[in-house]
Length: 280
Image (cartoon, rainbow, N blue to C red):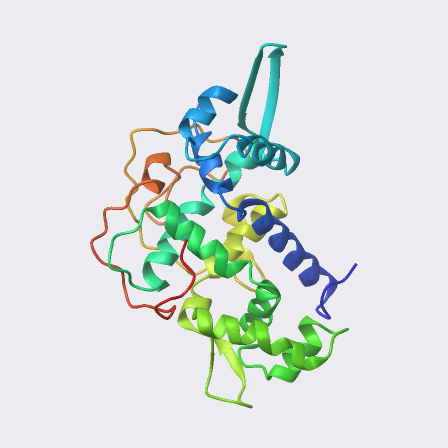
């Protein structure tokens, strides 16, 4: 069933990315995925790594991640059950450092250095706003669009004025710009900077190798050469066959578990989200 008035392929693309974001955005999901990096763990071992979760919170989270196909439960015996990433779960992990890179450049400045996991959670909060993905897709592909035209494309079965609450939120979040009431809307530098993140999420959601993101019809840029960024970690994980080839000097940062729990940067670049924006 179509969710927008966009062509079927684009509509399906937006729906897949929206669903992918909905899998990982709920509170603690990314942290549980990170805690599972490495060999499969027994429930008690995983619970010790996410000890901030209260009794009864971990089991439903794990079940949801298993249902989403990101985590698998293996019953070796009735008394020996382990949890680990599926191949789909492992394939998603390289997207996380890309989100951190975007957040460090575009999210608001704060008075303390944030761990990368917090950067990811803050960024996901912005991307899962209602209608956010569809609005970002339209603005990226059409550059400037009026509110009425956006409404006709993004929510064709609703009153066109319903487009303004999500639009105002995206402007407040720093992802969309406008010169004033009645003027067209366009992506901000921060919104446009989401290209590698959303292109890669689209490739993952469609079951394609992540290096296909450069060919995305909306977010792709075959000429782009991302600047290399070091990700130092004491722990690594073998890449499955579904992942792109080994990192080269011009490829996105490789996944390393330890990097996302600590953050050594002493300052964050120019803010795109106003002070008081979404923070957990």
